[in-house]
Image (cartoon, rainbow, N blue to C red; front, side, top):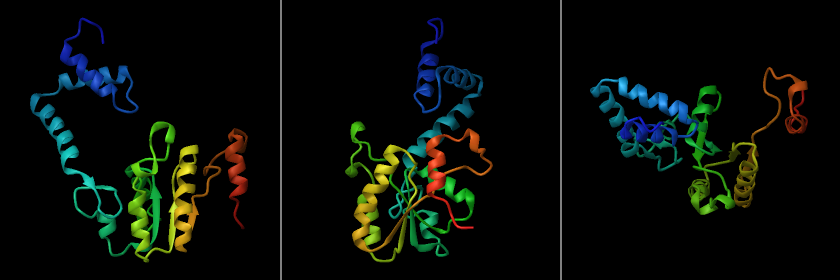
Length: 200
């Protein structure tokens, strides 16, 4: 923001810009919007930030974010406890739950392996996953990390740790999206679609 703006407003915009997906123009708009809010609304907004940071923690079972010791999904007796879907982050759990098709449990890694960025196995929640599987109730682990170099490396690393335990380890199928047009698909997507083809 230009020098003629008040310093607290500049700092507020910079704080918004530090969030993922927020550029400086969007951050400035948000900062100006905050200035147009009444004081009580601003205090409620600030309190919501503090509450989210101080009251939300990791579920002791699946590592998803929750206010409770054990999250509602892990507490649900109707869920299939023999299947665990391993995901990178909490937002991936939300994506799967929107489908209303998956009825198993989850395990949130809170990241992907990336040695170049200092993310090694001990920085992820892999130890907790192995402890869960080691209890003997799980028959399948679905690796649902993104189809990136880091996602594939993480899935392969965990699969190699799990296979000696005698359980089935599967990977999400990747390929053409529903409604996609072949001519617009890239080579890797087409190859994955061929590789993951199913019987009709």
